[in-house]
Image (cartoon, rainbow, N blue to C red; front, side, top):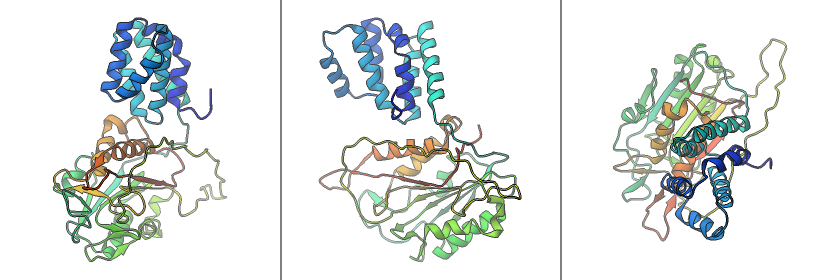
Length: 365
């Protein structure tokens, strides 16, 4: 098997034999194919092309072509392999149940194996929001950086936590001081991470406060690695930004991409038993949009980035997948939503992940 194949491709290719036994009749095969279309694992056009290409061939050849194409489309999206396996289980036969379980085990075997952060306690999460900085650079029903119809309190309640700290309407300097102060004053050694979500206007330099001044991402990062924040040493420091990073609204293109994970490297131990770490280590930053582009918030519907983030941080997903995998799901969902800016094309917002984490980060079940 090719090393460039995704875990889903490897798992399904390894179990073609048992899948052929499951999909051993035209009726069952058509039923599974239709459900894959309904659940958006494959498009109608792709299914039609496969049917035309393999028309007249034996059922086994058509089954193998179909499941191998589905495996390619599943790619790096872990929720989709679950969707495909749930369709197989719905056939409701012992061999189908066995096939689904076998493929699931194979998928786990081929999954990425990175070290995990220790989790002695919970996170300290903070929400910082400004409710009105100024007019949106684009004035229509989907505004860039405009005030949301739902409050930060309402949005943060969608993510379960027992230690939220909420701050609103801060100047740029206050944002920096509050973030550093919360990290220094609320985080103890029992906590395993610090999570900060900032909803505001922004520009290519950073995040804007209510005074129109800018605090940069490096400044915010520096504020949580001071001596006063020693309890966060070696622990994840996670930031999510719902803010513009410019004024561009790029036209979309069609392309396939993958997000390779870095190889695991052993770290040298220093004499006192602590790992020697650079100050930039253990950060994860999620931007709602790519560098230079606008970030949208619907006047009535709110931020699609924050909504997707809340969706995938739900225990349904976050209890099974690491944070980097959850953010890939967020990227996939947000980038696939067309936004009407009354232009000759639909704008597709592309979130960005920036990470110096050294292992996998999981939320507690």
